[in-house]
Figure 1: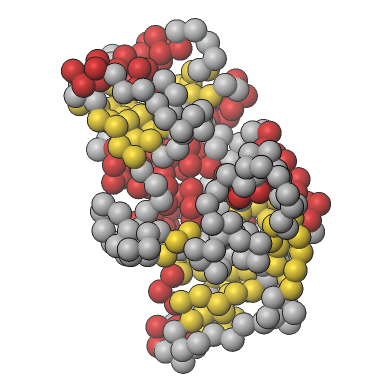
Figure 2: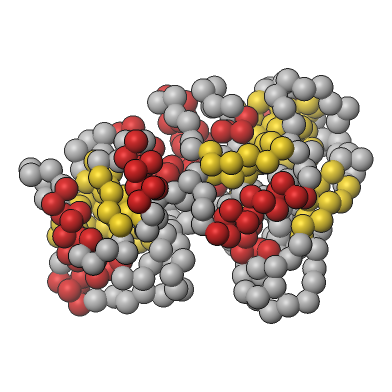
Length: 361
C-alpha cells in the first residue's frame, strides 16, 4: 500500500505543541470517471504546514496527508475524455478548491478549501499516489524539473494574485518593494515582477539574503533592522521615479507607517500575511495620501492557470533552498526545522520519486 505522511496528535497548547510527523499507509486509489491518478514525484512545504504542526491553523486533521504543493506523473485516468487527455503527462496540482474565477474571492459558500493536513480537504500531496479531478491539474512548466515544479503552486499563486490582481503596479518601469525576501512568496513575486520589467527592491534582516536577491535581479535591498532603512531605500530609487508604486508584504507590523514615507499618493500595500502580529495600525497620514491596503490570499483556478502559463512563456524557475530525498521522517523533519529557524532561501521540497523511475503504484 502507498505511504503517506501525516501529523500525530499529542497534548499541548496552540503555539507550544509541535505535532510529530508519522508515516502511514493509504489505499491504492482507483480513479473515477473524471479523475486522474498521479504518482507523486515531489511535494513542497509552506508556512501553513509549520503552523499545522504548531496547532496554529484551523481544522487540523491527523489522517489527511500534509502539504498542498505537488508535481507528479498521471499513470491512470477515468473514462471521460477530460481525464484521458492527461495520461502520461507531468502535472502540478491546483492547491485549493472552491474558487473558480471570481476576482473578489471563493464562490463556494464553504470558502476556499486548501489541500493538505486539514478536515476541509481530504487530499494532501505528501504521499506516493493520489487521485484528483482532472480539472484541478495543469501541465508542469517544461523548463522546470519536478522538484522545481512542485515548488510553485501555493507560493506562485499567492504572489501572482498579490501582483497582477491587487497591486496595480505590474507595468515596466514601476517600482515595488517586496518585504521578507527569502520566503517562497517573496521570491516568486521578485521573479514575476522582474519578468515584466518592474524595478524590484527587497527587504530582509539578513545581509546574505539581500545579496542573493540582488543576484536574482533585485535592483536593491535594505536591512529592516537598520535605523532609517526607508531613507536608504528612497535613495536607491531611479531619479525619474522617486517613490514606490506598491509594497508586497507578508509581515505586517509598521508597514503602513513606512508605506506613507515610501509610496506615491494612491500607492498600494498588498498584505498576504502578518508574521509579526495579527494586526497592524492604520494611520491618518495614510488616509490623507490615499494609500490603499489590500488583503490578498491565494487565488482562483483561473489565476492558477494564468500563473502557470506565465511561467511557461518566460521559462521561469523558482528558487529551491533544500531537498529531502524520499518519505523518511528524519529528512522531512529537517526541512521543517529549517523553516522553523527561518534559515531557508527559497522553497523546501521533498523529492518522493525520481523522474523516470519505475513504480508499482
